[in-house]
Image (cartoon, rainbow, N blue to C red; front, side):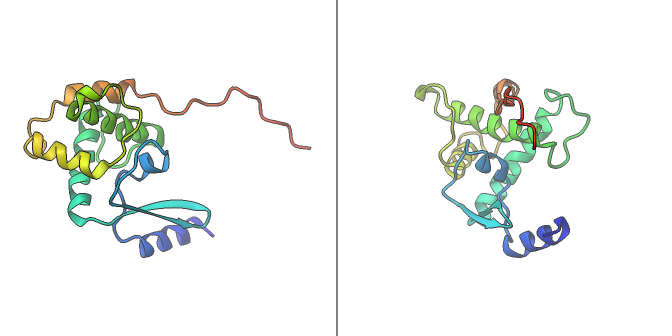
Length: 156
């Protein structure tokens, strides 16, 4: 399947894409409002909640905009390069989770993005009082998967 065909089919079957799809596909986050699907040997994630998708979009836009300096970017108007997008999504959600539930210890996974986002909007009055400096520290310190140091097998 060519890439253009794939994208057209993806958008046809997934009318409400989960904005945290990369974090979910990285197996670092989950969401009760997500629905996984497979298309051409790839996984996609749809959102079952219109209101949840709007909240998550606002949250992710806020995280991207504020992470720009920390990630040494000149702009962050949309999706970032893959590794930086993973840092913003997963690191940002882990940092937010630590703010919402500080007594539960260090977090390595987010179990429900939807409930975390709802709690953030409730506690921080629609993200106006969100302590972004603490979340940015979590984004900067987040370490994704490390590259394997094993050499590749030569092909015969």
